[in-house]
Length: 498
Image 1 (cartoon, rainbow, N blue to C red):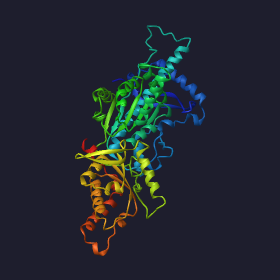
Image 2 (image 1 turned 90 degrees about the vertical axis):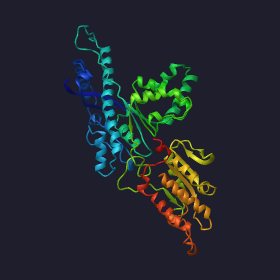
Image 3 (image 1 turned 135 degrees about the horizontal axis):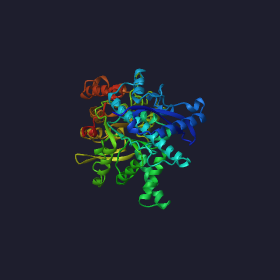
Image 4 (image 1 turned 120 degrees about the vertical axis):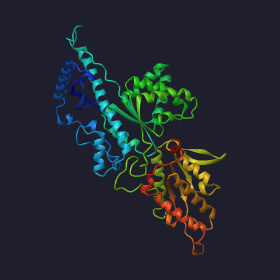
């Protein structure tokens, strides 16, 4: 077995403004034979380290902070991410420290994902350092008066490139913590080495850049893709894609060529998705032409499934991870409690959960009948109705189940107080709540009164079937805004097909 040696690889980090930001030593134990570091390389690294240390000798310049920048707790996600106390703290160590300090609840499926991301993180550090030092060797040799090496010399002047690390593809149900895990990984990397982007936004940018390259820069064929790939990698070679999904035929037709070029030029891909790779673009036009891209993903990325997780953290604290000691997200906006702000807060939560995605009307087929969904974000499986869209028209259990199995979160506005003589409205609301409850749908309401006061009857009618049935509805409505229910995994059609 080859001896193992601890190598200190110096790197000058550049800030997002393009100026020298800080100097950092990356210490990693690796097989000497694997990295094949020559004695000439080590001497060069020592000389570079000496020069850099002399140049950036102040305490601020020598701080090793960028590589260990992690997301803070979900409750403080908008603030600057927390940094681990120790320079060599791993993702798992940092996650466990948050659990021990009661800022997170331990989730075994997030741990599984973080182990794979930590593997990638460690390999990325070695890979980027190796690439940087290779470039420095070439620059040093090109300017040295004594760069000639005899053919018989045993000290090699070139070093075999470190293999490109395999990326990670995280897939699982909504709210299980995929994005949170990727955020921990992303914020642990140097600023200039990584970029994070929503996949839909990324592809819009790609098509816009293709149009510009063709019509303004007058490029064609491979030159268009080469130009775009260079621009993407200039932002960061580690690319973190959130909400990876393919629904558009134009996207499907360019992905294989684009990603092949990115990976061949040193891109490292991390992605989160609600679908495993084999289910991407399922049922899409000309999908047979898309299958080679799936093969590429499965070859270059390690797949991590989080479908076994039963948790949904979207409406508990922040989107991913559970914050101990906090209450569930407010999901009922009650006019009788706060008439001035209820509708605005309802609107704000809708904007937050749909992330500015496209919202359109959708038609669902229910046993040959068409059911209209007035507003829906297909990207996030979120629908929005008024009370009268759902209960003011002739709809039954089959319609409500179809809606609950299609959308994981449903917003309903203008829910009134119900009167006893409005028996059809009462019965439909009871049926609707039962259907959504069975599917573990997350329900967000803009409502006139609390569940306790939503349906009040006089003494003469308190023994009717509707009153008894509404007692169950009232109980379920209370449960559906509890932290325990909001953590439950949606069991709609997407879950059933996996």
